[in-house]
Image (cartoon, each protein chain N blue to C red):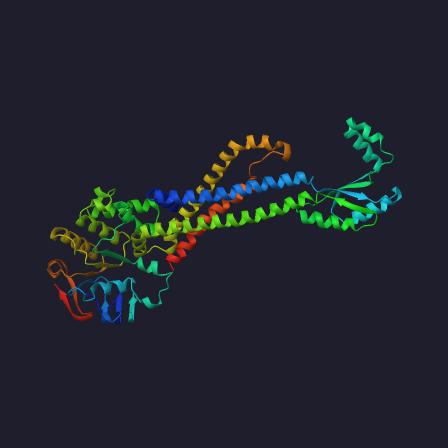
Amino acid sequence: MIHFVQKALADIRSNRFLNFITIITISLSILIVSVFMLFFENASRIIEVWNQGGRAMIYLEKEFSYEMLPRLKETILDLGEIDEMTFISKDQALDKLKNEMASRTDFFKTLQSNPLPDAIEIKMKSHGSFEQIQGFARQIESLDMVENVEYGQGWLGKFLNIFNLFKMTGYAMCGLFLLIALFITANTVRLAFYSRRLEVEIMRLVGATEGFIKTPFYVEGLFQGFIGGVLGLVILLVGYLTISSGMAENLAAYVYTDIQFLSVKAILTLLFSSTFLGWFGCYLSLKQILK
Amino acid sequence: MSVDKNINPIIRLFNVSKRYGAKLALDNVSLDIEPGEFIFVSGPSGAGKSTLLRVLYLAENVSEGQILIDGMNLARVSPGKLPFLRRRFGMVFQDFKLIPSRTVFENVALVLEVAGESQSFIRKKVMHVLRTTGMEKKANALPPTLSGGEQQRVAVARAVVGEPSIILADEPTGSLDDKAAQAVMDFLMEYHKKGATILVASHNLHLMESTVRGRNIVLEEGKLKTTSTML
């Protein structure tokens, strides 16, 4: 194996320009994909915060009385998916409101009765997608004594629709760029192969197996993919460090959370993808040339 | 050179023909070659000398007929087995076929590398062969910096380093001056004395007659015309 690695490194050195172009292409493709991933990862976290981690308020009808609470709680719990459940009576809600709006005491003096409904605050166990929350909320809404369920279905739903559309576009663009990188890698291997056609012919004449001939090309492809991936991520990290601090300050009022770099899982996925890309480009090329 | 008639032929051709389109490069050639023979294949250009060698090392498939190498039918050699069969041959070409980006040492070592030999064995063996061909001092040189005669000596070193039982040489002296050609032929004769079977295709009859003690096979328009012994 050491022989093949040495051979691949020697080939990369002797075809510097070609390999440089391939590595740059792979790194740019990985950069584009990783920018999308960085955006999606952070956007998901922000949405999570906006969504209050799967919290929802169940507002109860005026006819609701405290005696009905145990049965209602039981019914809601039977639906599953509930992590926490807290009853907030209309008096508690009014007290909380008064505390939060302490400077507006005049307004509260004009109130002849408590206009707020009784409510139950719930936290769902899984809140991965907006559709899940929506479906669950609809089930609760159909229960007796439940007037409506508030879970950010207005603006958050619309935002999520736009976000999902953007996500789909992102996936399509990532796929396109990876495909371009794949073709360029395959083409580089093809050019490298043709530039070493005499060498391959001689290897065959002296009894080299196909594995002996192909392995250095595969090692070269793996190197190109891995180095391209690392380079793309380094560029992303530099860009992230340069602009993230300023961005975090500007967005602090809206997002209530830090902009974070890619998770370890995402980094490993990208490195694996880029390395695989290098290998697969090589595989496609050699399969066509050596058939 | 005398050939023991009780020994089975190492190479057998049965009615071998090779067509390139309408042209018949080999026409119904049948031939037995005993182990340890030195065969000189002569004939004018286009007579089929190179084609004969090419079908022997399976660079080309025959159109008709069969070839047996040491009892193995070449028509039945699977692509996976082909590299192992080729390791039994050492090959020398008129255009040397050396890898220009690899040193003399690396070019010769390639044969042993593909056979999976250890680095220490390769170093020892290659340096020994380069010493015997007089190319030891040029071990680190690249082929394009060498003269034609030196390049052919490297090619011969590469052909013998794996100690093959058969050497196929296609016009090995074709692009060399007389002195260099003689050196190459002398070396092939030395290797022949160790028991190897050698086939040399060449139109340089004068050189062969002055060097070779073996059998002369004459090809004309793809047909085997005459077989004679050179003493």
